Image (cartoon, rainbow, N blue to C red; front, side, top):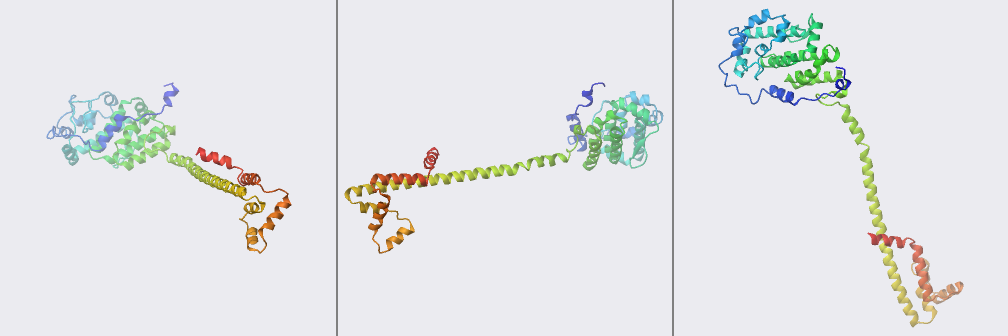
Length: 374
């Protein structure tokens, strides 16, 4: 009672409750009712022909003499299985399970239906609730404060409410369940008159309702009023959570795309640089070969004039125009060399070639290293 960690502890779902109520909502898929096919004990009890066992009390006595006797209804644990039969075994092994044939016969018997509704009203008054119309709507009874306090402290009655809700659905009063569960949730979550019942209401009472839409309405109502809201573990999650996760995920997409594009651009740029480096290296090799050929020709031809012709650049528009003109090329080369005052020897030619190569591509060595590393 005084431990704050227990009061704020997050609730946990019950696997037993989920499995039990799943079987109930799906009409007990593995149920076999051949054994008591011709017994009809529950129907005969409601027709006041046999008493319930082991107490030996008839239904008329229960409805007339036990009504309002809250001590007897509280401490006797054998009558509830007879008043609200199910297709499953309860704590009273004298009570017989319902059969599908018995359910159909029960719905056809007006006398049994009338007494069944009277038994339902008697138990509602025991809990401090009253039935106000034929559609199943309920409200607080006159003595609701006393009975709610008792209900909040006697948790074994939550099992009885679960059984009553199941039996309503079995015997043709499925529509009565939703108003009762809604009333209990309102009292537990909004009015806070029976706060101890909210776990059982959300874990058991809601899931006795076979209509999924009705269950979702009740769960949305409970989620709206449940405190603390982050501890609500029933039904679908809140709608705000996926929106936040999307908002967090969307900015990361363009960054990853831009990174991939940048890496692809870098790869293409590196490949271009490597191809340029290879081209320049091949060009230098060819120029070196051409230079070696020129040096061989110079040894055969000692005159400087043909050397000047070989060293003359031929890739410019001025040189092509000069070749097409009538002026002889020898005079041109002589004037150019005499203006500089240096004779174009083979060593000068080599040095000039290497300098021009370095000027054309100052990063030639680094590019080559990159090609070798690749």
